[in-house]
Image (cartoon, rainbow, N blue to C red; front, side):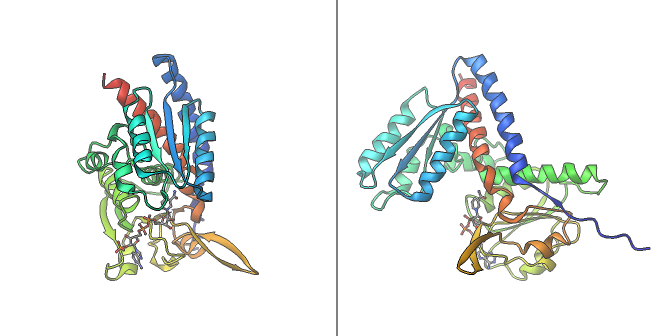
Length: 304
Ligand SMILES: NC(=O)c1ccc[n+]([C@@H]2O[C@H](COP(=O)([O-])OP(=O)(O)OC[C@H]3O[C@@H](n4cnc5c(N)ncnc54)[C@H](OP(=O)(O)O)[C@@H]3O)[C@@H](O)[C@H]2O)c1
């Protein structure tokens, strides 16, 4: 008799987010006990971009919920470049501030890179500062970007679930294919996978035979920003699939919906574990941002 295929384990980002938030809240309480103050996160929001305003409000609320200190610095859309720069430099010089996040996009007329460069690497909770990028590349990660951290946490979760199911799967030695080479997702994910002793291939828009390459992947991480581009039959049976993509598409009758970069149902029919499209990494990058703030605070105080 042929055994029926096991349904894929679905890696529920929301459940893991709640777990990470609980962990961070407990660590914040320990930090307060030890250092007599809470870790602090300061967010700079310039302009009135509605999506940014929502993200920042969510970050503010989440930080409060885990017991962190901090402030949102709201500046008008017509803020002068020098004024914004001076504000970020002020936060950088303030010894009581552990993490600084400049919400992007910045208003027109602002030289974005100059503003980002004013955030010192030890307070760079986004992990984009060249020093943090270099630390990660040299195998000594300090502050790592949140979405890649989330991918690795999901992979660990997948490994634990598959182990409990008695399915043979090991991160060490796995063939990992990362589709996408952006500085914020693809490259840092690849570095983290390499550190976990995967054999890593990074694919991009010039890669030849992408379907064939994906079919070699025990671990497939997709971050391209193209709705359902990765087809179900590109997935190796038994693979772990992490879909980072978030794409808004037409759902008919005048409505829209969010889909990932992977065609979910046919991919789930072959994978051993898979993220549920946009519900994998997206919902909990804020929890990881808080974890990074705590890490920044611990590193700053520990370094003294
Ligand atoms: N919190 C979250 O969950 C989160 C966070 C960040 C991003 N995202 C989502 O993740 C996706 C990727 O974001 P990103 O910022 O990394 O995007 P990005 O900067 O636009 O990079 C996209 C990457 O995909 C590659 N690519 C594009 N078309 C391709 C094709 N046809 N075949 C193979 N590779 C292709 C590009 O290759 P080239 O380099 O050759 O152009 C590039 O490396 C987006 O949907 C975004 O919304 C989610």
